[in-house]
Length: 219
Image 1 (spheres, rainbow, N blue to C red):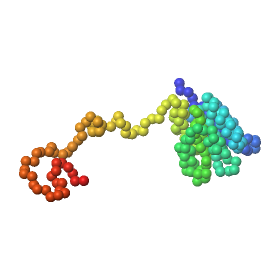
Image 2: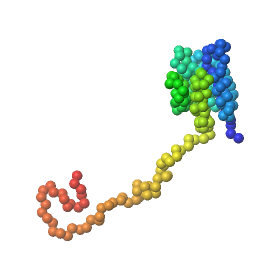
Image 3: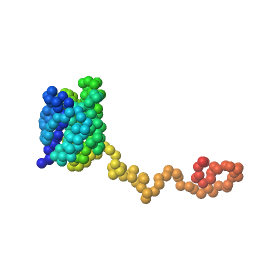
Image 4: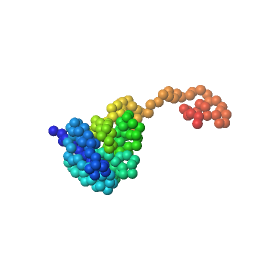
């Protein structure tokens, strides 16, 4: 039986951390993941503080029981929005394609999605993914990447490799005739007819005339 995919959810919001607003985005992300077969191993709230976010992401990424960390909030251009910076400082490799997919999905509904600075990457064998702070934005972004997340986790775990692109040309797939043409043991192809001995009497050649000398070509 395959190992289930395990997630940690971190809601980043000053107001939610202070208790003046209810966390709606975190539970929305959890519901989507659970519906896709994921197990939620932890869920918490942090204020918009770079150091706190960074330290918590570092600790979660070091947990072997977590395959992916999903943050929600702090991805905009506000003065307190520092989630992407904190995430980037932790991750070892970037996955820009995931962030591009999420922004592309958001742009279908509002041009403001272009202001999202969400990033995605990998730390060790754990993925880190930023989602927007609004419940609707978080859901739309997650839905955009959910179909490929399980494969991404498998690759990061080292359980599967990248599948070859269908139709890609390989050396093994090259036609036999093509390989033979460039084989070091094959004869060089030539269209030239075999040379015959000229038995006619030599003509007097003017100086600099090279016509009729063997099979040489003028340079």
